[in-house]
Image 1 (cartoon, rainbow, N blue to C red):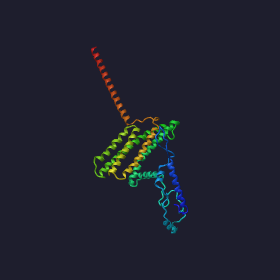
Image 2 (cartoon, rainbow, N blue to C red):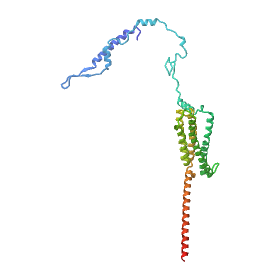
Image 3 (cartoon, rainbow, N blue to C red):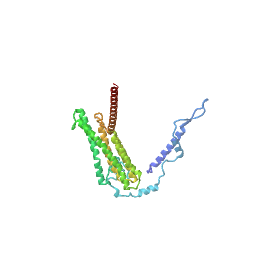
Image 4 (cartoon, helix red, strand yellow):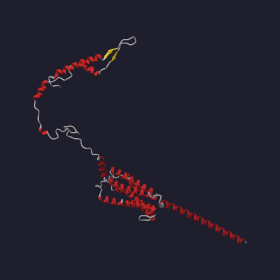
Length: 347
């Protein structure tokens, strides 16, 4: 608003002259086309103006400024400014860049590693074994040590066999001795895995006899039956297939134990306990498979139980055939003797 009294008449005169000029411009912006024999009279646009300007000029003939409240301005002019020294500080005259003035809650800094920290907390909570009884924890951790030992032994012996194949001599053992020890370690790992799988199934029989979580009968007994039924046939398979089958068996039993814990058939800490042990055993089996795969073409395959059964069957067939040949040979010899005796009697 213009508050000077001397400038108001000048502003009004300027605005009036502007309105007059605008109206003249609107009237002169259109002209009538000349009449000819061919064309009909028509309005032809000449320097067209905005419709908004036309509408404003037609509806606002007076001044465009608001009405000035002189009494209110005089009242404000006579009032004194209020002073508030308590809010005056070194930062009161500084305008913040990242937020508005008067906003107390500033935007907090975003933690870029919040997701990573949450994942680490989840992993820590998953591996937390605070509720597991100390005796069960110590014995269970000791139970996975043979798996770790056989897996590390397989990796080292595989490396020693490769070293002997490349350089002609092993690092600590000769190639033949490393291969011989490898053929001893592999059946130990497979046999120990079959024992552990059977033991994990037997735990559910004990829980059923103790009536932990109620009596469930065949539903819980079946877990203890499936475990040894899967475990012991793996001892008849080749090494690679046996390790893969036991890896799947361990994971299946962990799934069964997790379901049993949710149903209340096992203690609440049993799932976490089983997860840690299954993780160690599964990692050991994977390490053994990797070490075995590095020397698959450098060692002779050790005869397995199936090969021994086949060899036994073949030896039995050979012995039967040999006995049959001997029996026929005796029969032929006996017939020949009888023929000779008959010939002598005729003479």
